[in-house]
Length: 327
Image 1: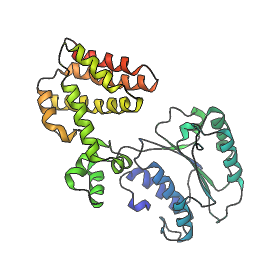
Image 2: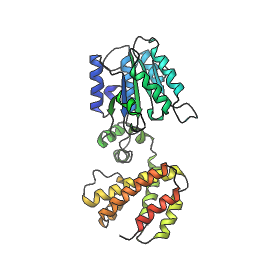
Image 3: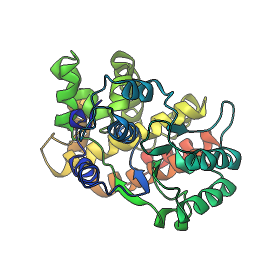
Image 4: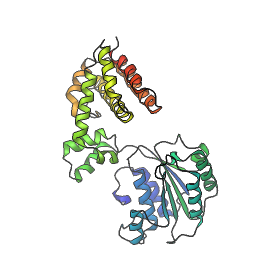
């Protein structure tokens, strides 16, 4: 996808285009933002713009350099991630990249290394990369990609030019999906439930998502004040595996957020669960705003506890007890 064809991220793209035009690219960038919003696409598009034989501000997509970058086998462009069956990016991988960046370019352009996700570099790897950032090889560009920068050393972050990427606007995402043949109603739903992530929107099975979300909303709506037995049964049903529990809690945050929004305003514009507007309207009419705020906070905290591998059933049970508690 050419720089000119990327949807959204106008400010970030303008920054890169200006640097390309003036020949003043920074030696290291940190692309930060949610998963699937286009950070890696922008990084690879920048690499193609730098190596394109057409030598325009963008890239042709047809020349040998563009084709090789697209195929992942260009000698001057490397994408580094964890090796198969590994959970981290090792110091050895970083040392290999350091050597490659110091070699002469095969194509006469810049040597480019894209580290994705950069937060999977272990501490030794980050310290090794820091030496490269302090004395960057000539005609090289490093691009670090991360969901957030919290897992990176402050000294590493300070040596990169940060570009923050936000979720795509719903109208832009829905419009793009329509150009791919998705009907308008489904496009609106996908744009909402994907959280502004194009990658997520393209990978969602709409029918499966509808059925799962219908089950989850029915489960929450069945929890009534004082219904502790039902809360326990619901916790047991959703605690079968970590992925299922995490998915439910991520969705539950959107559910309580939607109820909170509709409890204070009749506008449905920012609602995520567009396929369940009737239930949202019904529940919000009788909801207590302070209780919804509390549940939203507790649901987020429960998700963090699951990621720390706390007992799933106990975490869900405590959350659901708060749902059915007297208020």
